[in-house]
Image (tube, rainbow, N blue to C red; front, side, top):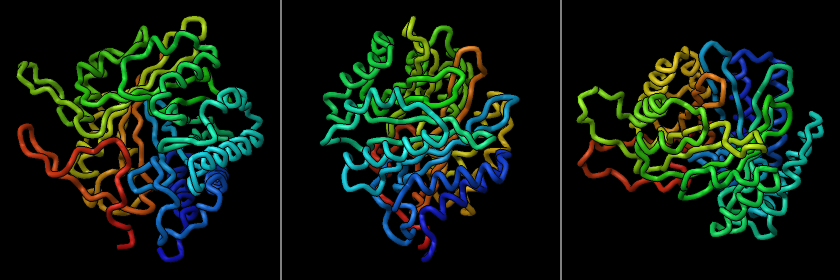
Length: 388
């Protein structure tokens, strides 16, 4: 641990994960090198030092997260999310460094940044606010050419400007009536763009929903034809720990009263401005005792939706050797994604845990007093360093 750097840690994780999902060694090595390079000076920091910044990507402030996307009868898809400006002195510099990293990668793969360029003044003000400026995600495809996604902060000019920023961004990207199609929300945490080669490049708008119930989760969808309400309800209940209905009609309503759920609507068709995709994200780490329980719920979800769950267990083993019962947050979110004319997709978001393992939590039964304050949605401070 004394000599291991952040870059060493995340590169080794990516190489092991690549082997689990069947990436060729050369492709995985290329992606690992690019990930480390994109982190700049932060990649050379020793893990014995504090994180380079309080990155919002993960609870222990590691500026990298992995995810595994699974659907029936299809190969697993591995992704990596990173904050290239994580070592910058402020959010404005963070965004500037992020843009440089994105444009370097775009030139490498001959990817157009035109959509991102049209939004630069909206999301990169000289005095930027918020917990993030720019993140990127790479879908790690065979052949060494990934799919690229960019995540931006609608509150960069202040939370009071977030709605107007989303509206202006959608208008510039040709989705002039899209905002009116979205559900009511407490906040707009992200706006995301697909760059590069995608079957149907998307603009995605994320919304925040505190205190959500299964019935309310079903009502968030705006895609027509969309996912079956029974699928959304089953996903919600399994991920939240409520279990499937018994049919007796006396199950207590489960609400996500800690870290809130997120919804995402994607837009691909400018002619209609109706969403073409819907995703529900449940922060499972705040509704379980430990990662053993998270994996049990994830396995149940995958089985329910017709996916072999074994690859997820192999993926967790590739990330860490710690017992799953030793902490919570290795699986941070579980998501159900629906796109038109495709089978539902389950995604598990996986923490790198470069700096800390979050202790497990006692989850009270209905009516019991809470053992700690509710999570607000912001990253929690590092709790136990891995070297301790």
